[in-house]
Amino acid sequence: MKRSILVLVMLLTASSSVLAQLENKPKTAEKKPKTDWSKTNVYKRSADHLMFQFGYAAWAGKSDTMHTGGFSRTGNIYLMFDFPFKSNPHLSAAIGAGIGSDNIFFKNTKIDIKRQAGILFESDTLNKYKKYKLNTSYLEVPVELRWSARPDNMNKGFKAAIGMKLGILWDAKTKAKIDRDTDGNSGYWLKEKSKRSFQGTRLAVIARIGYGNFTAFGSYQFTELFKLGLGPQGIRPWSVGITFSGL
Image (cartoon, rainbow, N blue to C red; front, side, top):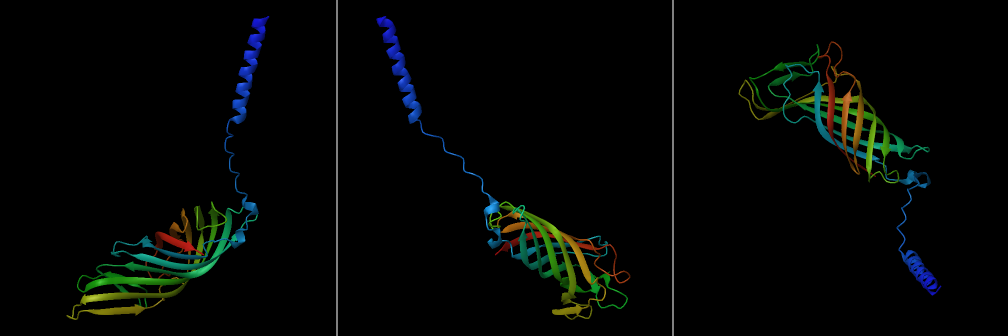
């Protein structure tokens, strides 16, 4: 009997000790609840309202007689207006306006941009050019469907966008720095301007992907660069580069 009472006391003591340890055991940290973006005022967020783009430009479909060389480049600036979806703040639609400009550089090539029969590209190894470029500038309206991991502030977090842009030709010109021509003249610039051979509008698909204020972009023009009968057919400009965005 005494032994039974002693065992019972020992069990009660051990049980009390275990219970005390369990009560004093620190509680595990509670998981942080996920952000309810539907309750966030995304209409006052930073949303890529201003975009600057710089990158490499090229022509798809150009012939072997068009000897491009150097770093052909593109530069664009857009002011955008962003409209979040009420059903899903991660998604938004954006529309804006701006200017897009492409500079395509050539080597050992002469371009007659003012020719009445249409623009002409011809090999030229007699004149010595330091640089020779064809510039086209457009007034553009880009439209994007956007996704952002941080709907409250698109200056942070992963984001992506896809869309289209419509451009109206504003200016087209060539600019050449001549080291020496066939007449022995040297050190002068030759500039010509004409929009006659170019399509008046262009339509291109655009895409961006990146993090925070920086995204990689790409564009491909669906419409041809030159008018039918006034220039080489099948040429469609494309570009890739970096976008800096904010505000």
